[in-house]
Image 1 (spheres, rainbow, N blue to C red):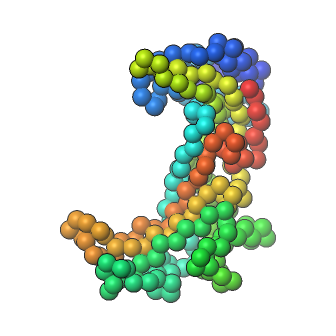
Image 2 (image 1 turned 120 degrees about the vertical axis):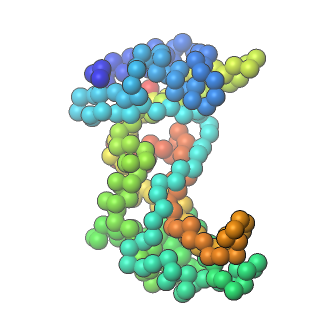
Length: 236
């Protein structure tokens, strides 16, 4: 693996920015990453930096946002079956079955009283219904899951994009060094979904379907993505 210094990667990215619009080296969505790697002359999708370790190189189009499912798992201390029994309501199409679809955004209480709250002393994200704690997720567990999905260290490069005569062009204009995911930011940048319903089609139609409880990172844009990390340094 080629070793870099932070100064060298900054210099390379600055030179790429000064080139202005460059034609994509590959069609489809992966062109932004392939073109960046080719201009930096990187064969592997990672960069070894002193003091930071191996950083994964990623790129994203400016002005777009995406939602990323981190993982699906029930909280500790309570089962989804118990949650459904206590808070479920009849399905309008299959009234013999209870369902429960709830979304918590930014940790705020929703219409049915569900919310999330960080407990610093316990190192947990508590899932509450009004003032009652239903279950919890350990903050370290959330950090590990986020690291598995996103990577524990990134050099994230943003580019403007445009299409002309069937070809896509990129102008790489901003880059961040990101390390050490901060699980406390999940409440600000995620949705927490409880999805307990029934099958709507297929051979199991009308039968209970536990989609699980999922964390989804939302609004991942050039303005919000950096704040998922304790170390977030702009390098371009």
